[in-house]
Structure formats: structure tokens, C-alpha cells
Amino acid sequence: MLPVLPLEVLEEILLNVHPHQVVCVCRLVCHEWKEVVDSDSLWREKCRREGYQTCDSTKLPEDWCLFYFLCKKRHNLIKNPRAEDKLNGWHIMKNGGDQWNIGSVGPNDTDLKYFVTSYE
View 1: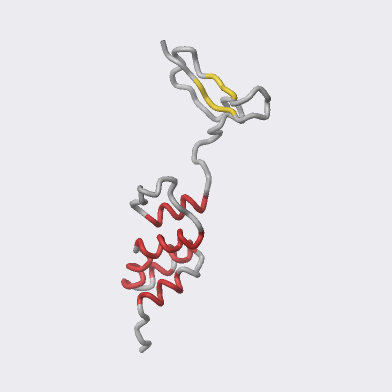
View 2: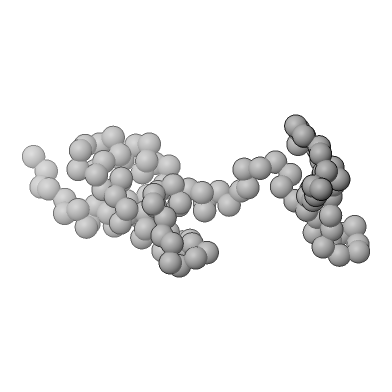
């Protein structure tokens, strides 16, 4: 029988394993490993080591694991969020007021774009 591995040592080992392996493989080893993988402390430390932090330091994530993976992706889940492709990728359900349009931060075509609308 193998000696029991202290949880602090296990956490340090898991911090050096690929995150998908931690969630998909290591979590299934036993109950103790599952608890460590599901712990806030593991994912909070993983975020700290990789430099992921909240924009507002007074608001901490409710789920550090989810926060870690969202930061890791750094990908907006909305297709074409800044109107680079005009309205492509969007389905307009209602087009009231002055209709949906694309605004620009500056006068050039290369400036940042955004969606605008107004209602009377």
C-alpha cells in the first residue's frame, strides 16, 4: 500500500498538470483527489500563477475553476461583438427606433466599431 500523499503536496503537483487533465482525469482518481480538484484554493492559485485576476478586485469569482477556464480562453462568446463584419452573424429580431447601425470611435475605417441604436 502506498503512503497517503499530503493534500498540500497533491495540490502543488496538480498545479503543474495541464488543466484539462486535472479536470478530466485526475478528478476521477479518488474522492480525495476530486475534493482537491474541486477546491477553490487550487484554481485560485492557478489563476494567481498565470496572472488571471478580476477587473474589480472587490468582487471575487464564485467559481474559480470556471473563472480560470474563461480567462484561459480569452475569447468573447458573442460572434462579431465589435461590428468588424458589419451586422454579419447577427439576427435582428426588432429594428425599431432609428434601427440598428454601426458607429465608429474615430473618422477612419480602421477605427474601433460598435453597434448603436436609439428609440424615440
